[in-house]
Each structure stands twice: as C-alpha cells, then as structure tokens.
Image (cartoon, rainbow, N blue to C red; front, side, top):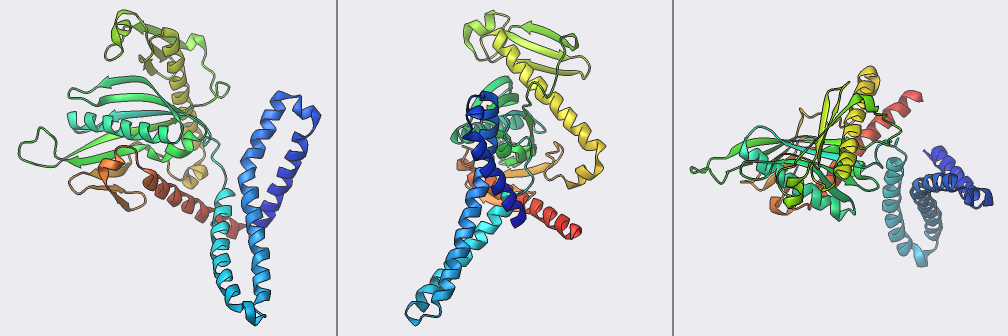
Length: 359
C-alpha cells in the first residue's frame, strides 16, 4: 500500500510543477486535464500526510512514556492516535481501490411500475420524490424527460436526468426491484398488499463514447399529454426517437421546445446504447463478470419497504432502517452510506485476495 501511496504523492507533486508552468497555464485544454487529475489525487495525498503525521506523533508520545511526569498523558494520547491511525488506514485502502470510470458521470433515472397495479404506480411516484429530494440535497440537478401518469396517481413510468459531479457514484446501487408492503387506501378489509417497482440507473456517456448516425434514427414528433399547460398540448413539441439497429425507442415530452426535447431524448438514447455496450463487454469477459460488485440486475429484489412495521430492509446488506415517512422524503443518507460501505468492504476483500495471490 505504501509504495502505491508514494507513487501517488510523486505524481501529485509532478502535476503541481506542471500546473505552475507558463506553457500549461496558456493551454486551456491541458490545464483543465491536469487540474482534474490533481483534484482527484488530492484527497489521497492529504490522507497520507495525516497518516505520516500520526506516525510521527505516535513516536513522540512513546518517548514520553519514559518520563514519569508525562506518562499518563502519553498513554491517553497513544490510545487516541492508535484509533485515528486505524481509521486513516481504512480510508487510504478505500481511496486506493480501482475507480469505476463511470463514477463521476451524470445518470438517467428510470422508474417503472411493476406488479401491483395502481399501488405500484403510486409507489413509483413516491420513489421518484425520494430520489429527487436526495439528489437536490447533494447539489445535483434533476430534470424530468418523460412520464406516464398512473390511473390513481403516481407514475406508470418516469424518466429523468440527474446531473452533477459524481451522480453515478451516489445512485449506482439503486438499480433493481423495490418491493413495497402496505395496506392500500382502497383496501376495505385492512389486508397488506405487496407490489413492486423497478429502478434502472443508466450512465450518461460522453458523445464521443457513443456515436449515433442520422441514418439509424427515425424521429417522430407529436403533441404531449399531461401536465405542461396549453402550449404543450397544442404544439408538436414531444419527440420520439427510434434507433433502428437496436430497436430502442425513447421519447421526451417535458420541455416546451421540440429542440430541447430532442436533445434530452438523445441523451437518454445514448445512455441506453452505452448500457448495451457495457453489457456486451461484460458478457465477453467472464472473469470481469465474476469480479463485478453490484451489477444492478433489474430482476434482483434489492429492498423491501414494509409500511405496517415501519421498516425498510436492504436485502443485499441484510440491514433494516426505520422511520419510513422520513426516508420516503429523501432522508436516506444512513441507508446509502451503509450500502456504499458494504460494497467498499467487498471490493477490499477482492483486493486483499489479489494481493495474497500475487505474493
């Protein structure tokens, strides 16, 4: 680990020297690229500096143990330093884990009603509120692209973009089947019903990563329905894109402008094609497939929201959380943190096994 850390520090110092060079300062593209790399390494460097400071202070306090006047103070300080050192070591191990290249990217969020009819649609709407509120609390921008309203409210399906640095890293473990158990308002005998809603998290790739040819597209325009006012309903502002080679169909109706709707639809189409590309790469590489953590398979039931018992259980980590009314309003920091900690631990296990195999 320490050889890796020394290499990171060496690269960080090299980047700082380059960034001070007039040639780099006058080259906007190179300046941006090197600044971004420096920013990504800075957290590791600061952690390593704190770790080395801890080692120095630990050595100093061990020397104080020889002096009777300071022995008790030194013992207490050594306990604190030992705890701090352990925490810094764990943070450094996590920081050195291989980075998911998609972590910094924006995402496309898709929520679809599953089994359970109207109750599933209602819960899809509640899940969207949960994600929207949490995304806004993290400083992200949420923009609805298309939706289909349920018979009694909620959504049969809704698609939205979540934009902001690191959006994928925050939401990537939300893909899968979400199960809800509660008594519907229309239930006269108080029976608990079970329904499901599906969540998909798609990476929004750069344009250069996915090329879409004009000849492969069929573009249809139509009048949007639902919310949006008179303008939306009286003009052909909604856009439907059909990608002929893959058969993927994407539509966007939320903007007043046809141009803006087409731009959003292209983002979603590009994300879906990127997902297909990643799935193909994964299938072609069985070893990579086995090493992946949290594939987000849509058929996987990842979580149950049990309203009568005020309990939300994430089945992947085997942990439950309470106060569902607050959680459904987007107060999911503890839940998301526990899930990320679990997957970081799984990745660390994999790294440790690799290190043992190499040794």
